[in-house]
Length: 116
Image (cartoon, rainbow, N blue to C red):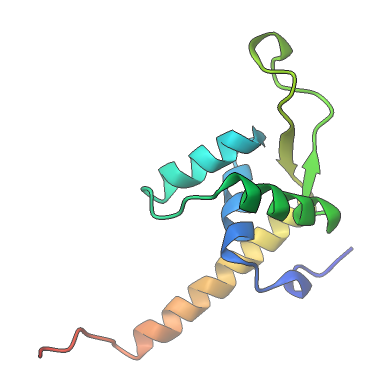
């Protein structure tokens, strides 16, 4: 099984996509909406960026494309749904821990706004 650390660091786009898929399977537009909502509008993924990143995540096995839609009768048949793979789950957790370590290191420096 692959070592999650071998995939790090993730790009911000990849990390945001994996976080969006951590709770539930989503289609592309729902991933975009999830990221905007979770970041308070601070991160907005454009469709081209999203789908290029998803193609890469699919290729390296961090995300799977589902064969079935959650509720075909209430959904557009053209939508593709994505699922966080077990490897993807381990990688996103490893990246979160890596980033938390960076934040801890920065806090040890006790940065303060300069009083100019």
